[in-house]
Length: 209
Image (cartoon, rainbow, N blue to C red; front, side, top):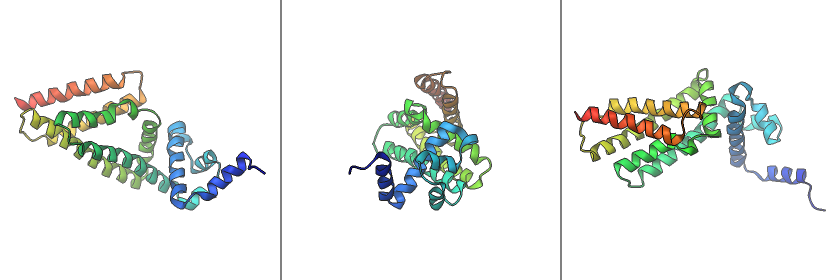
């Protein structure tokens, strides 16, 4: 006798390895955070969205903070991998910097991923371990941006130190991303990138004087 839809779902759940199950719960958390926000997100809701018992979710993640940290690691890990791929692509300075800026201010930076990041940021204010993860990743991302900016400046014949300029521009870049994520009607990704590049080139022109 052919299996019913519910039976097929149960069989699929039973075939998942521990790593696959953890990854599935993390993915469901990203969606839940994006759609419900920090106020209505719960580990129980994630289990409900997956159609599994809450006890299964707590088996893999003892606390909701454990799940939030793992979810942030999954999101930031993907972003970091994209940065590594850009840096390994042997592009010139301008193209490398453009690619990194596009990660923040491109069409793909919007949607559920952006909403999930914002929700996690709200939780980080009260969760030291999550806040520590975010700080550590921000340091890595800022360093990659600084390398790209320095490469672009060198291509323009500028030899000054750009550490302070890179730090300020990275904060500006994240600000543009946040504004674009929470107020998508204010400006399009293309407009946000154009505005950011106007600030960036103006800052380099100042450094060149």
